Each structure stands twice: as C-alpha cells, then as structure tokens.
Length: 137
Image 1 (spheres, rainbow, N blue to C red):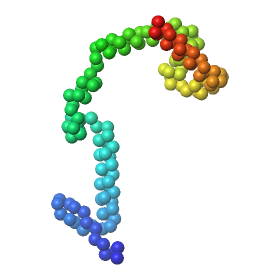
Image 2 (spheres, rainbow, N blue to C red):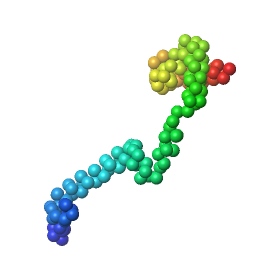
Image 3 (cartoon, rainbow, N blue to C red):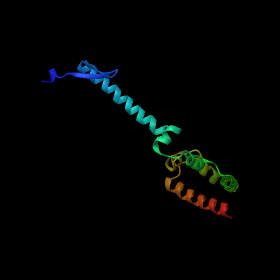
C-alpha cells in the first residue's frame, strides 16, 4: 500500500510528483533551513525584528545609553578597588589575582600551590572582607 503512495513537492506554485527519496531529502533540507533560521533569529538584533516583536526601539536605546553619572560612579569605584588591591599583602593580592582575574578555581589554585582548598576558601573570604573594609572606609 505504501508503494502506491505519491510524493509531491511544490515547485513554482505547482505540485510535482517526486520519488520517496527526493521527497524526504527535500523536507529534511527545509527543516534544517527552518532550524537554522530559528537559531539565527535568536541572536539577531535588527530594527525589523524589534518592530515585528512589538518592541519600541526608542526604549531599547534608552536602556543601553551610558549615563554620565553612572560612569563617574563606576570610575570612582574602580579607583577605590585599585587602591584597596594595592594595600593588600603580595600573597593576598596574588590569591585574588589568580582567582578573580585569571579565573582559576579554588581547587586548581589549591593543587598549584599545594595548599588545601578549604584554606584557599578561608583566605579568600578573609581577603574579600578586608577589601570591602578598605573600599568602604
């Protein structure tokens, strides 16, 4: 019964009879294309997409515009952080640098310097409290 089944695809607004292999290959490629469009659309930022989704583009720009006041506050906080980091002991600064700037995990740092991971964690907490105090005062 399935041998008598006719497979058709639409070409230039007309149905064309094709073999089963061609039919499945055609639809497989169409599904792949739809999937790729869906993935690309997730990362697409365009005026047309915003309009289609009903998003007011003016609001998007106002949310992303840097506020001068916020930028000044951020610069001041960075300056305080730099001064606080400079006030740390060299070993403390090295630990913070490895964990936060080089992105090492406590476990990796632990094996690198042959100190238990719990000790690394305790030192990190102590140093962060010290940094907080230095920044706030």
